[in-house]
Amino acid sequence: MGMKIAVVGATGNVGREMLEVLDERAFPADEVVAIASRRSQGTEVSFGDRTLKVQALENYDFSGTDICLMSAGGAVSKEWSPKIARAGAVVIDNSSAWRTDPDVPLIVPEVNADAVEGFSKKNIIANPNCSTAQLVVALKPLHDRARIKRVVVATYQSVSGAGKEGMDELFNQTKAVYVADPIEPKKFQKRIAFNVIPHIDVFMEDGSTKEEWKMVAETKKILDPKIKLVATCVCVPVFVGHSEAINVEFEEEISPEEARDILREAPGCLVVDNPAEATYVTPYECAGEDATYISRIRSDPTVDNGLSLWVVADNLRKGAALNAVQIAELLINRGLVGKKKAA
Ligand SMILES: NC(=O)c1ccc[n+]([C@@H]2O[C@H](COP(=O)([O-])OP(=O)(O)OC[C@H]3O[C@@H](n4cnc5c(N)ncnc54)[C@H](OP(=O)(O)O)[C@@H]3O)[C@@H](O)[C@H]2O)c1
Image (cartoon, rainbow, N blue to C red; front, side, top):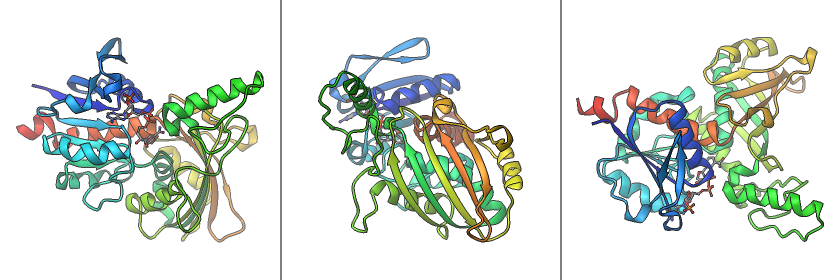
């Protein structure tokens, strides 16, 4: 008997991408099951050159499932992940429900793969927020070399980060602008077409948003609790791909040339950075790609040992689906689930 994988949220942006990534990477599963809400029961989703019939979460029996890739939002995860975990499947969750739980590892395989061993306390592993995942992939190799003291980051986040409703809202509002139809924001707080919105998730008491707080808390948990970080998270009218303007202050001196060389060798990173020829990346070029792209590496002369950089990744891939599948591969390679575990 081989591995049995369930994808919960299979009709959503992240779930559909998970199915694509599982197929592309020839994930060693004998059976892949697509699960969503009762609304989608009986509909079909693509899995490679096949289609899978969607099953309803509340009717599904998870016994015999090895890994459950979960991307159905925080409320569904809070209720269902512990039940699925008790049935014996390791849950890899994409929502924010478990990320700060001390008994749940928060994993980006290129950064803190060893922390995965702690999964058995709850049988749940958390995937970070999309903007944190690409940030820590780029920062980890630089932190190892020169120790990061402080990070200031501004994000330019695509509407797919707000799910399929977010993408529909940008599409419909853009059309409405051209035909002078009225625009009524639903998913976003203000009009997103031809606009930018410095407001993602709810406001906190200190005036920051929960999205900004997540970047701070998750970077500390994954990379180093000593790193000071402040973020401004902004939603922009881009369908797929998050961009980040990052300013880093290090303890030790590090030149842009050395940073470029380190990042060229770093797992998951792709440096596209030739100022002489104005070479850099934009989210449009990174959609559908696995790498975290790094451009515009330069000195920040306003602080000691400062660097600025521009980091772009596909938020549905490295920010969600790809990272979750990489965690599943990590579990298999370390013999923590499936056949090797049973042997
Ligand atoms: N988009 C990103 O960049 C990103 C990145 C990291 C993490 N995440 C997280 O991943 C999760 C999913 O995001 P998304 O962008 O894929 O959202 P989405 O496009 O809105 O999809 C939501 C999915 O959840 C399912 N669902 C909703 N309620 C359910 C229920 N009661 N029982 C079972 N399934 C239910 C939906 O099924 P129906 O179609 O049947 O309603 C759909 O498959 C969220 O927690 C999000 O925060 C997203």
